[in-house]
Length: 182
Image (cartoon, rainbow, N blue to C red; front, side, top):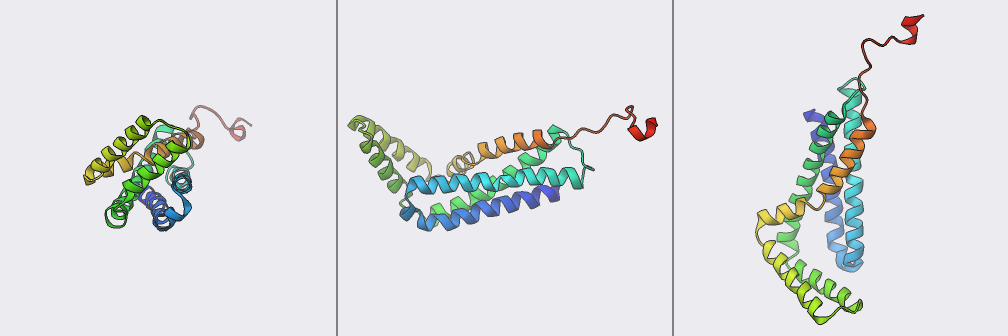
């Protein structure tokens, strides 16, 4: 299981990491909303490797049969490895290349609130929330934990769906095949 999980997890993580690296330098030109859309689309695409990893494990290691739980175990391990790659990439980018991330993100949120006609109190509350996150993100462990929970739910859902689709139970030993019955 280790080889399959590592292979597919690292490929998934590399894909999401490379797309993050490619997107971050141009995010200000794309706009935050478009950059978020591209980011989440990339995460979903990278987690398609969970499906292929479970299928590869089923077909190559388990002789074409896998239970839901074993498929889930393979998929969640791939997901965790991919998420760890995502977190490491974000940590490097955040601390080395994005010193003003929360300031720009806060300005974007305020702009959206003003455009929607939000009250000054709502705008101030949002600014306080952004300031809270900016402070939290100064701690690398908190930053890593919050970053991990960004892609993980998507990977979890794809893992559940993939394990359900790909499960194949062993055929009963007592059931006879049509060839044996003849």
